[in-house]
Image (cartoon, rainbow, N blue to C red):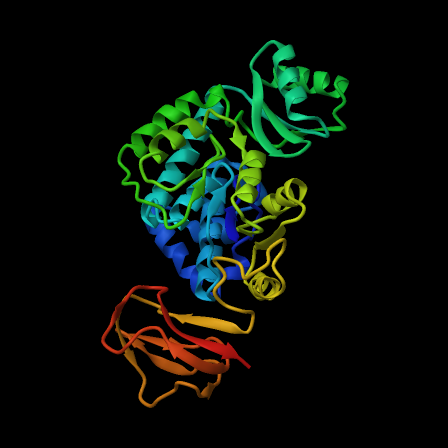
Length: 391
């Protein structure tokens, strides 16, 4: 089975939207800008690394790129059987699963970023990665430090992040080194995220969460707080409230997903941190990523090959590498073009019909294998219209 994963803060980089500008999925940027009341395109194209380090900027930018990548893989027919996101990425997972609609997701991510930025400015905190030490020994190092320092992320075997007051993080890091840690690395962040230092951010975010309508997900979403699959709507209010002050149990989530039968993980968004943690945690699983449009064909080719640790086709995979979906560019009534194109070979750019005033054209050359919408049917934006086999 395929699981889509979504990265968190720290995966952003300057210019990370540039490769998507000419892709149809870039249209989501205008919607994100409207919902956030900010110029998201500028963040994705012009903001430098220093500007993107600010929590209020990095979270919105990373979330938007994940949504662009999700829309792009959906357009070519790659589907998932589950969702999981790391920290901020949990909001991407919830939007992807339909638990929260896109506009509400943008507003929540914006509020979360602002709340965490303010909390970090109110109380000095930092984070550090501890490499090559068992979880229980990292926890012991924090306890022995005797102050405000806690485990914030369980990322992978031998890769744990601690956070808290700078002096206490330094002390716990020294103790971890004594206990056998192979490497300690200070993280370039301005706060102690996923610790009690984020209590004020949790309280502020709770007010925004109270206004959100949570829906039943299309597929299970694995939560950071308890590393468990959630298939209902009602758990998420409390889970998201707790998430800001609780450790991210990512390693445990990956183990649970593997136990539940997932064999392929596709990271959607900037960077490749989650793909790396999956390789460290579940080496027998397939770990892929979509950072740019160029990655999509590579992922399709990988998915068309023999599935990893599975005897049959992957649940959630609907198209082979030679097949593509053509989707609606807008919402409205679909009207097919004149003539019967079914079974015919068409060039890239061939007109297949229209949705309102918008033309539906295939981005690829190939043989039209079938239509998924009929004349006079009302369709939504990004709804599949036809599928073809590329030539």
